[in-house]
Image (cartoon, rainbow, N blue to C red):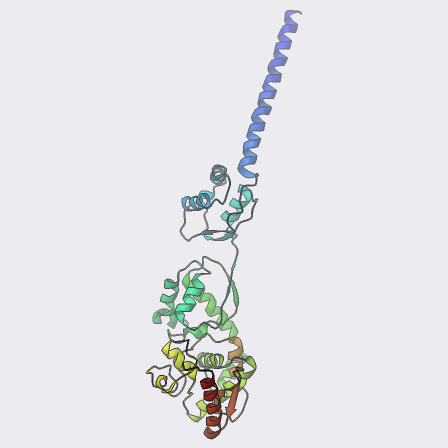
Length: 350
């Protein structure tokens, strides 16, 4: 072999070595690139990732690590840094999908593509109960929600008071983001209230000489009295008759609400003298606020009440949830005696 051939052979070997080296480096780099961005990494241990308001990347990374949300935390951290997620943290409730890559997970978090929360409420009695229920669905705690429910200054902006604020919350199913502030939550609920009270509903309220808030207060009593929705318009008409005549409403559920004892099944005479503005056996007219969150059916029952001469009602003795209605006190006492006797037979003393 000539010297020239030897040099040429050596050069070819060097080139081949360099090609192989480049390919190996590329393969290693490609593998690392794949592991960092495209290898499935999200586990199925958690369904959601909650990122709190004011959370830093360090907080997010700690949650992901501590809850085992990804298999390889090092590759996630490297991808997060490379994709500049560390300074793009957005709060929210994010649905996790098993098998998501780091790239998909980080893109979702950085874009704030969180899943809306479904919030449905109805028939809640106390503000504390409502605040606790809402706090289980969104980020703010019950204390911060209750603080606004009891704030005269805050509620006055919307035309409500701590007594009648329940009228603002129209029972429905709402979609909202988990990281809502209490203030944004109230703003959303008030917007729905404004939409609900259409010109037609306002006109119907004016025709019975009640404001929308007063309609809701009366509707809450109708809701508490009626086990069956089909009786609501009749019950509403009865109470409107009593209001027009200047009679006390004398509604048992208002006494129960005043006492805050919702285990009571029999309203005894000793309860009727309990001193509370919500006790309609003591005070004429509507109580200062709803005694429960009135349903849409109850509100519409007041607005579309059934005309009658009824001014008395008593639960039926068959415990069907229906009522016996009367136009005079004598007939009412007959109905009341039947029900009291039925209570006695079942040994219901309280």
